[in-house]
Amino acid sequence: MSMADRITVMKDGNIEQAGTPEEIYFRPANTFVAGFIGSPTMNMLEMQVSETGRTLSLISHSINLPLPKDIADVIKEKELAVVTLGIRPQDVHCCKQGEETCKAEVFVVEPQGAEKIVALKLKDGTVIKSLAGADVPLKPGQIISVSMDYKKMHMFNPDDGSRIDRC
Image (cartoon, rainbow, N blue to C red; front, top):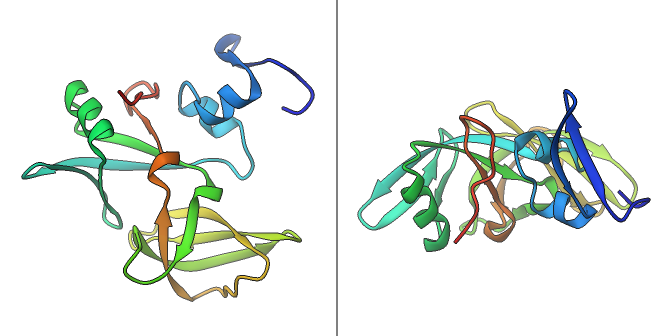
């Protein structure tokens, strides 16, 4: 990505997305592009859409994410019952109890110098990755509180993998 002004991502001879490295990284057109660009790869979670009162949420066995209005409106408009949530490892953070999106068990810690890649096992057994500073004390088996940055989340239609854009 650092050697070109524009990139084309192809799959099976078809162009999936063409654009600047920033466009492809920050606004992937579909789940293939989202998983292809970036290391570690983007976490992908299948989430059920749930409406309680005036709040639309994405839920799984491990996560309950109340959605901001702009995202909720788009999902309602598309009448989706399931959404694929994409979140990059650098947007998954250890946090204080009470501020979490979910709890997770530290599964594997991979030191990388200034940072570490942390595999986190959610309650339902799903493993997601997070990036943490080398100085963050994490050990396998430890239960931690995890937050996800709403502004950095990506939503995809699980039927065709296409990006769901915000209003």
